[in-house]
Image (cartoon, rainbow, N blue to C red; front, top):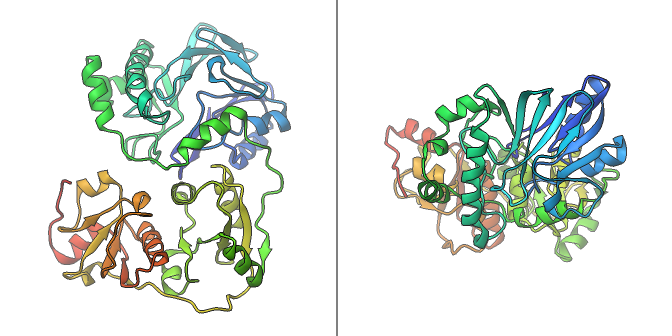
Length: 439
């Protein structure tokens, strides 16, 4: 069992060596670089690609695996997928050649969700739980629309009870994990067992349907708007990826694209953006979370021009965009910018003093501890939010999201902005003052 972990999206795919040169891939992402490297290292060809559900947070790589490796795609028969696949219903089995994949309907995270038990004869080796049961939690049920949220939460309750009937030693291999906006406990392990979850998963301690649904719905936070669109793209099957590269663009070409509505995305570190950047550029530093914030802040059909440092990986930028469906990457600025540049100062935690603070972290982060008096607007809600044009120190947990927020505000005319280089704990340490908790 080889987990393929995407730290940025908080997800895990799995590669299973079937022992005869063939492999099973479960919930593979469109970005197959690591999965292919692991398969090549072991001399494996992916013969089966299993999907637990219609993913909303990334595009499936199963289509690509079918085209390149001849993989046989298996997925829920009730998912309405329009590409070639084997539709499975509750109790159906797939012979992997020695091992068997047994489909269990486990609706909740999505209506067509399947879990897969991996069997060796009569012995259950483990279960691919997708988003039905994840370590310390269960995945959110509000991605199909508000009218489905509560019924799916009720279905999630019953799916969890079904999985809990498995032997305690059964390994669970979830698709969603820590860092996923599909809801996972921060810092949670990627895999677990049924027995461990019975003891440690708070949702499994709630004995009745009504309490479970109420507590579960109260725990749901915000999620990127692109989640609303990817499930339908996955239903039809994303297109095959051709040559994935950033085309070099002249400054004149970039100016023309900007005039037609393109957006400059500056992926350099926050400190580099602070020192000098092209007016109107949005700062989204290249890191594992780049795709999430790109998807949160820009529409899927936005034409994007990249600004990067020469030592930053161009392929990583393109693949992070492609895995969440961003196909309109025009290229990158390949020569010095001929116009004026702007700055946004960064300050140390001890320099805030009595200045007004704008905290752009997620609700849960803010509630757990913030600078007293800080104004709170989640970064994802910032475009269009009525933020007054006042002097603000913008802050997050470290500085990257704060610089993104400051760049968005600068695009709308805010000029009296500074960004905190650090987070609330750094401020508390520097000042000796206590953080405030609660909303």
